[in-house]
Length: 272
Image 1 (spheres, rainbow, N blue to C red):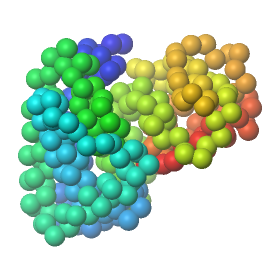
Image 2 (cartoon, helix red, strand yellow; image 1 turned 120 degrees about the vertical axis):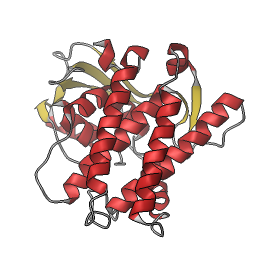
Image 3 (spheres, rainbow, N blue to C red; image 1 turned 60 degrees about the horizontal axis):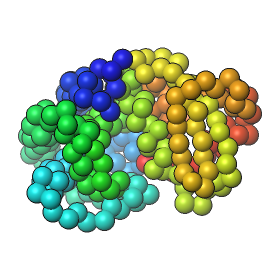
Image 4 (cartoon, rainbow, N blue to C red; image 1 turned 180 degrees about the horizontal axis):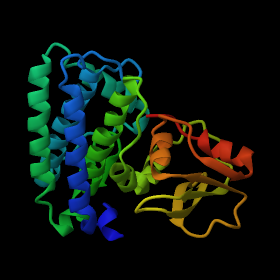
């Protein structure tokens, strides 16, 4: 359904609603008195570093939109390979500030970010090209997806750090499914074996359930909706397990067919 495809303008209101919902859940967890220095699923990140990362990221987004609107020249993108290191350093750079200061700042930054995304026109949503620090020039809707990745996946990270059983939000997972193919496209290991092959990906649940034919070769990564019955291997995911697998938070999915080929696919990517 188009309202669940945030790559289209019809999905804009849905994704921004879910971003705000996920942010509210994160803030409720992070503002607890004993939460600030608690561990998360991100190695060496405490809850305060997740909030710092959100502040660092959103304030970078503000500058990116200023560049896009002014026509100025952006700096070269770093690439996703270094994102974990740079994002971690950025998040930890705010450790000298108090929980109260940072929670007020992240809430204000979210309001400002929504003030950028909500007024975007249909033409802007897909046609305004904004420089991304790690991915280079991307359409504006990628920034809404980035917000959902940050607030959705990092809320999962905070809950994971608590040691309690939990699960990813259905709305967040459903919206993120199409974007996981982009994550995979940009996170192939530099030394990966790119001998050509095609594998099937089946998402069995949610608003973006379907099957995709994924091809990897020296020409890159491509994913197209289509029948997968003729392929040597198919990996089935529910929406949440696909997102957590693509982000390297879990090893999920069900392999049908050639396990060696499926394992080759799953090990092509570095984790972010």
